[in-house]
Length: 257
Image (cartoon, rainbow, N blue to C red; front, side, top):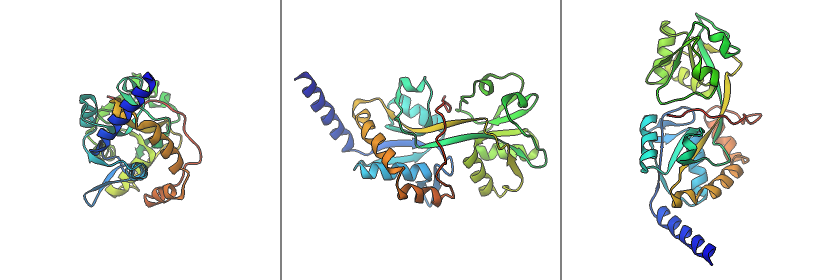
């Protein structure tokens, strides 16, 4: 009987929560999330929309600085943090579904005029690498290495600008994000990247641990896994000039405060 009451309680909480749109926050991270004609679009934004629509769940999504999204999640004013990389620290306050939104290959970009071929973190000795604030990088050697410099810039665009000016030697970012951003900046012919990713990650839609929101996670995970096997997902990828990945990356933890 106790289990029955608990189930009814959770169902009631879910009904109350879904009466109001879920609050979703992410930052601009094209082609996964971007602003297009005043709307939040991109691979993961479109995928999230498809999954939640199929589940009959309404939501509101905003593009904000990453640290602000993190603060909203920690303050309890957010339901879903989109495009979050897993970390043990985050898992204390957020729920990460078993199915990721996307796999991410983290590569090192360089200016074609000043090439660097990086096969491992050991090759970074004496170099300056552009990073972004509010991010943590899961490769332990990269995160804690003292044989090279990590230098923050407020945006990836700013990092690429510094790279072309010779103020830094490399920029670390997701491969698709770096290529997409460089093309938007019109400098795609001026940069290149080491073909060997420094490491791979999975990016998630992280859910609040509030009971009503948490109750949605199993349904979301199941529908996300199903949708990613459909032609609708293939169409989303192709809309942003991407193809279905050949294999799944190993899970690691990355972007954390």
